[in-house]
Length: 304
Ligand SMILES: NC(=O)c1ccc[n+]([C@@H]2O[C@H](COP(=O)([O-])OP(=O)(O)OC[C@H]3O[C@@H](n4cnc5c(N)ncnc54)[C@H](O)[C@@H]3O)[C@@H](O)[C@H]2O)c1
Image (cartoon, rainbow, N blue to C red):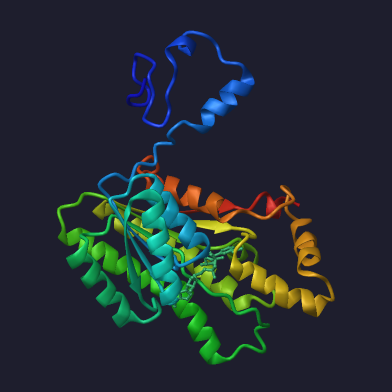
C-alpha cells in the first residue's frame, strides 16, 4: 500500500510500501532498520528546476544525482570542464529519466553568469534551487601566493556565489514563484584556518558570512540561504592534493590520508553522496525555515 507519509490509515509515501500482513505487527529491530532505509525522506523536488555549479564531477555531480532522484523537473549542470559536463548530464538523464541541461560556463566571469541565467530562464524556466558547488583550492603558503592566484581563488569560490545568488534572486523576484532555496559549499577549513591553504580558507570563511547576510536579505523574497561545511570528502580534488602532499611528506597517498583521518572521530573520509544528501535536505522543502546558517558535516573532525 502506498500513500502520503503520515496518512491516518498507516500508509506511507511512495517508495515505502508496507505489506498488509505486517501492518499491525511490531517489526523486529533488524527489519525496522531495513524498512527505514526505504522511507521517502521528503526531499521533494517535483515541479522544481535546480541549477548546480561545478557539477561535472565530485560533490556537484552527487548533488545533481540527488535532485534527479528526488524528482526534479529539470536539473541544469554547469562547469568549465565542457566535455565531462556533457557526459555527466547525459549519464544522469539516462539513469533517472530526469531532464538535464549542460551549460558550460566559467562562473568566475560575471558576463558568463548573466548569459547563463538569461539562457536558462528562456530555455528551461525560472530556477527554484541554486546549489553552489564549484570551487578550487590553491595549496600555497600566504607568503608564496601571487596576486593573480588570490584573485582567481576568491573570484571562483566566493565572488561567483554572491553574483549567482543575486541573479537567481532577481529572476525569482520577477516571477510569480513564492519561494526558492540556495545552498553553497563552504568548508571545515573556513572555521579553523588552514596553513598552506590560506586563500581557500579565507574564501570559504567569506561564504559563511555571505550566507548570513543573504539569509537576512533574501528572506523577504521567500528564499532560504544555507551553506554546508564538509571535512575531507573523497573526491578527485582531494585525492590530487593527497597525491601532491604525500610526495612532500615521503608517504603514500593512503598513508597521508590515514594521518589526516586520525583527527576525525569517525576515522574515515566523507563520501560525496553524504554531502549531497544534506544539501538536498536543506533545499528540499522540509528545511525552508533554516536560513543564514552553515551546517558542518565533518565526521567529528574538530572534536579531537
Ligand atoms: N573534497 C573535499 O574534501 C571538500 C571539502 C570541503 C569543501 N569542498 C568544496 O566542495 C566543492 C566541490 O569540491 P569537489 O571536492 O567535488 O571538487 P572537484 O574538483 O571534484 O569538483 C569541482 C568542480 O568545479 C568545477 N570548477 C572549477 N572552477 C570552475 C569555474 N571557474 N567555473 C565552473 N566550474 C568550475 C571543476 O571543473 C570541477 O568539476 C568545492 O567548492 C570545494 O571547495 C570540498
